[in-house]
Every structure is written in C-alpha cells, then in structure tokens.
Length: 319
Image (cartoon, rainbow, N blue to C red; front, side, top):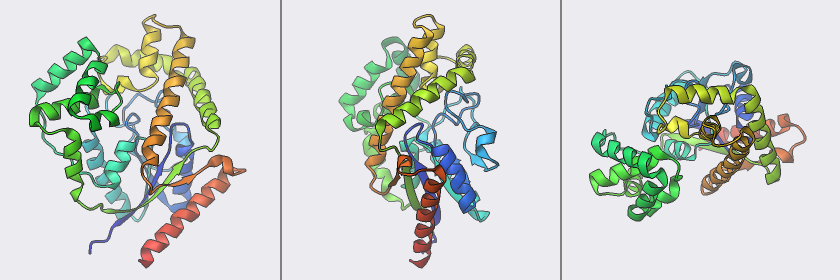
C-alpha cells in the first residue's frame, strides 16, 4: 500500500491568528507553510488580504502566495494541482508541509483529493454570463443558479462572480449541475494523512475586536492607495476585485461613500465572512479546535498544538 504523506492543516476564520501560529508550528516541527488563501495568491494585493510580511514569516518558506497577477484567472482546480506538487516537494526534502488558510473550499478539495474536470469550458458562454453579471448584477445570476443547482448556490456567496459564472457555465455546457459533478469527483483516495487543526475564539466579540483592529491598521498601512492602483489597472469583474476591502474602497474612491462608511462596511463584511468560514469548517468533524483565549500566552497555545501534531504523527507511524 502506498505510503501517505503526513500533512498538517491549520484553518480558522479571518483574524484568528493563523499566520503567527503557522509560522511557530513550522519552527517547532521543521515545516514549511503552504497557503490556502484564495486572495493572497495575487501580487500587489498585500494590505487588503493581510498577506504575511517578511518579518512575520521569520524566515519560514511560504508557498502559493504572491505569485499571480490580479488579471489572471485561477480556479480551485488550479490551486489543488499546484498544492499537490508543492506538498510533494516539501515532503521529498524531509520537511513537514503545513497548510495554513481560511478558504474552506481550497482546504477540503485538497485534503479530500477532489478530482476536477480540466476542460476549458465554453468561452462564449462564459463571456455571455459575465456580460449579464455586469448588466444585471451578480445577484441575478446567483438566483438563476439557485433554480438549477440549489446545492451549489448554498455553497457559493452571491457576490462571488467567478464561481457563480463557472457553476452556470458548467450547467449550461454539460447539462449536469456542478454540485453533482463534485460528488462524483470524490472517488480517488486522498494521498495525505492529515492532522487538522482550527483556531477560533470562545468569546466571539474578541474575534470581532481583532477584525475591527485589523481594518483600522489596513487603512493606516496603505489600503486606499493599494485599492486605487488595483482599480486603475484591472476591470471590475475580476475575482481579485471582489475581495473584501477592495470593493468597499471602490465605493469610497468613486465618491459613493465616505471613508468612514467604507471602513465600517469592510468591518461588517469581514465579520460576516468569519461567520461563513466557521460554518464551513464546523461541518468537518476532523478538525481539532484550539481557542487562544484559553491560554495565558500564545506560546502555550503553540506548544499544545505542537503536542497534538506530534501525537498524531507518532500514531500514524505506529499504525
């Protein structure tokens, strides 16, 4: 039987402390970070995506961040393919791959080895759907998706133009809902023995306070300038422009809202996003949850997480 690759997954909602915890676990376990964040993949989207800075990485290699132009398309299938190759390389060098992020679809598709159809689709259908999204609004397309594939609609946020268009494109070109295709794609066993950890705060207000603080810091660190530059060189329908922070800044830059209103909207949307992330992650009973507010110092939390991983790895070796 083929030996499975040991893998650590560290998930959690936005602002839960994944970056720092992932770096510390890499230091303790001789690992490297593989990002699972659908927006940190883009170059120049740094402040608004809370991309880890060099000083935060502390010399730990971080893979699958900051490698794609905001104008380039990138799918879940692309992520899974790249992540598989990256993890295999890390493992081959004797290091422990530690997947860190909050994009639930990336995480589940990777760990469960979802097989995606690699067809290019129909460019004419895709262009027509994108045009309809621009003219009618993505909400109208999402409502249409809900009529033909309610399961997919429940999984896709109504503002996610790329995924709404993709789901409708698959249905219109194949006649089979994308959710059904995804069910059929789970036939291949996973190549990983995954230790799955998740961060959250027992006191929800503590998480919200962290989110609010982060948004204020983003404004000070150059979010407005970053959003302005992005808007000037990319069309508005791109997935990268749908990231929380950028679409709200677009309203401020166009004069539709004041800066305070835009920042309040970012805080609100970030809190809503955190709720959606938690809902997604809690559906997977494999996660072992850790709560920073249970520990007097972060290092105590990190050491407990290290202990959990080492126990898991030892158990796998004995199995």
